[in-house]
Length: 433
Image 1 (tube, rainbow, N blue to C red):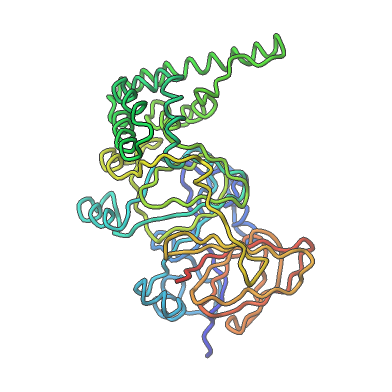
Image 2 (cartoon, rainbow, N blue to C red):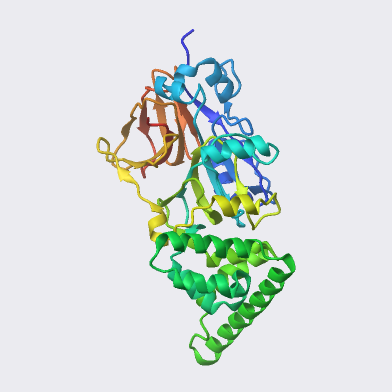
């Protein structure tokens, strides 16, 4: 029998506590869209949809003509589906994990190690660092998406050291003054920034909990004062943006007494519009705060954490490994580029070989569209629209609708007959070596 090389997947859902609840979650909506018989429990968090072959969430194959039950098993049987370059470069493994995230409460402040550090951590502490791969990742907003990413420009950090005395108390006057006088010398600034951040992260628990409580109390009173004075005079009262009050109170309500609450004074607060992306290379400190996104990453589970979490915290490794290059938030937005050969495709092509993401937006006027072949296995997620998909490699038509996930072997094309009136939006992950 001829081999089927294009087929739909049923993907693993992760119900982590930080996920959006029930049908508020984009993950849950996509799951129900892709499978109308799927049951979504209304009180349960739906945090991540894993589209790939990671052993913790290997996708199920939705095609009863295929003997293998999971994508991982199928790739192991037919490694040529990866494309010859990808197969050889990544030892017969799918090199990326494609995800949808629906974030309700903040994820831990974290960074992912580069290959060298990943190998060392895995060898020393395999219980905390499960594999030896690096884990660059990219997030593309589906809804307005908020996160922390990279160190702020020094001027902003110095501003907070002035306007937030509780923050200054944790960093210490000496380190704060050094930061002030290091301006203009990038190398020295990086070293002093590391000292400031390490001081704060290593602060005695009692000291930072007291300072945090003072700060939260002060900001809460300022917020109340602001609300009342607006009522009384119609004018805004004391502006607490100088202490980033709203974000502080939100994080504190989620993780009371957590050192991570102070990291908002060191790290850029990012707000991505739908379609905007951020790329998180090795050693870039970051945390996702709220919203829904597409995420693609190298196939790894390695994370070094340092706050906003009840999980294992490895402060020393984190403080040693971070990239202490201050930069404005605008520089952290990763641009997409229109594909020269297809105006419907925007490419998000990060500076790592493991993955590339394409956003395919077919306008309402187009009813026939061909998903072009690439020399790599790819996974397609339908976000919006309906179509009938045909491919020589599918042996039968596949109905595409919101939430459908399709695996496409290397060098196969898929023809879409679009039936929805408003066009289609899809995301496709692949590996363009």
